[in-house]
Length: 346
Ligand code: FAD
Image (cartoon, rainbow, N blue to C red; front, side, top):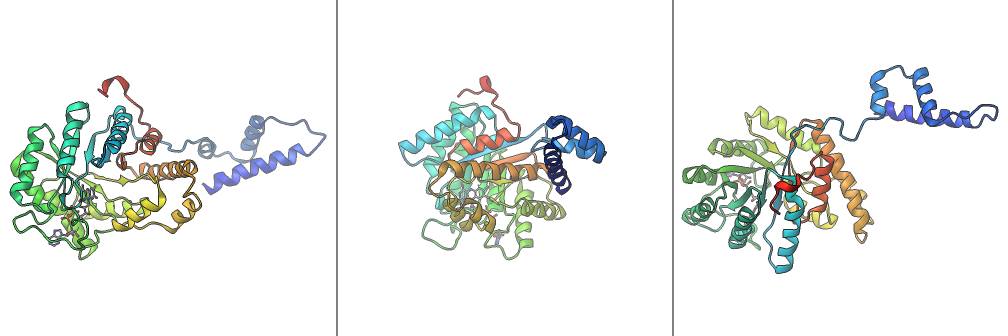
């Protein structure tokens, strides 16, 4: 890359040198560039890379999924459905709906998931947690999903209810996500996704113990891991290598959260144990009251992130949409995903 930049600088310098000589006929940009390349840069690969696109080789089979949260009010409901309507023609592999901390959104999650399943062509997935419910209650929720045609569960331990610092399992409940996965496989032939942590879950005894836990969830029947959000693609790649060394072979799908409101995103990230690189504070500084510029900066950052992930072989992405469509839509566009139009019911 440095070489390419140097060549581009050289082209500019060369152009300047020639332009200032009054006795010489000015050359067009193209002639000048060609002449320069012929004279000084005989390396075909470099010549080609001068015109290389942002993402050089898009995998032909990029898959995405979108995560939403259940709306609390009519207004939020309208916003959610507008987002679903915009994203549906991109034909995601599935769309999922979260389960509020402490199981607080059980009915709203259920309503939203079942409505997506019934009223669209999308494959709906329901998040389900162990928190605050007995095994019997959790099993009932899962059976209702199966009966409604919802066959994909994102199985989680869950966060404690608001106000509580530490997690304590329900006395008759599933203790951890691996127990929930095992329970679900006994109920029906669900497709099961689980959570993974490139930066290690905050309560894990060690990074290796956390990886062992991920392996237990896969061994219990999960077929996909979705990562906690992260901002530095290298964290993801290091985690993927460690997971492969630990014998984890299922896809580990990177979870990406496009930055809509940097302060909120940074707080959310910190609460989830995700590190926010210092350069991001610099990148978004001064943009608190400038949503238009913030969105442009955010889109270019996300494009850079997916470019690096794609270059490292990633072809499946999960978007934490926060019920907004635009940035996720733009990133999908960068990934070569286009609306498939007529197929979607929406
Ligand atoms: P687990 O895999 O059970 O692990 C939790 C911790 O316990 C880890 O530190 C693990 O190492 C440790 N552990 C596991 N088993 C044992 C054991 N037997 N003994 C001792 N320690 C053990 N939260 C919600 O409330 N609702 C959601 O909808 C939701 N969706 C999410 C979606 C994704 C993609 C992700 C990444 C997270 C989501 N979360 C959600 C957050 C998640 O619930 C929290 O991160 C939670 O603290 C851990 O859940 P888990 O499923 O990873 O737990």
